[in-house]
Amino acid sequence: MIVSTRGRYALRVMIDLAEQNNEGFIPLKDIVKRQGLSLKYLETIMTTLSKAGLIQGAHGKGGGYKLVKKPEEYRVSDILVVTEKSIVPASCAECIGEDCPRKEGCRTLPLWEKVNAAVKECFDGTTIADLMRE
Image (cartoon, rainbow, N blue to C red; front, side):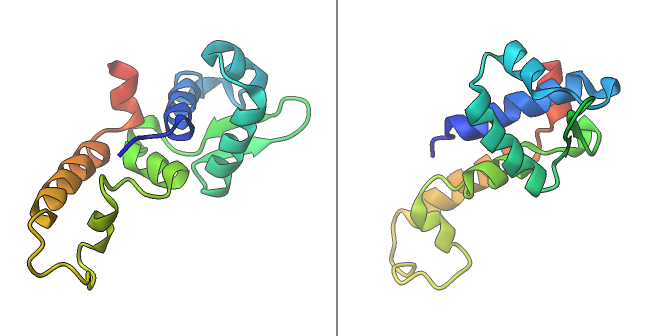
């Protein structure tokens, strides 16, 4: 599994918003400046995060973006699932729990189950607040 720039940037933006959380709406241009990211690319990420209800956006003077919850209430998995669609390490790991045609006798499935469980535990157990401290 490779987390794309979309997922990595989304995490960076969420941390940035959390660090500025007491300032109300944060203009996107300020985030772009601090993070050194492309405005155009970041606009698409912000739209995705906003539609998923992870952030709130406001247009016009005094507009920008802000978190809708406390940093400790955002799990890394919540953000990556929205931006990456899937965070499984191998495509067959998505068959876990479903009727996989190769499930019986598949010698690699136990490996993917272990890796998937470890990734899930890590991403579910890490919050934006944790990343702010690291």
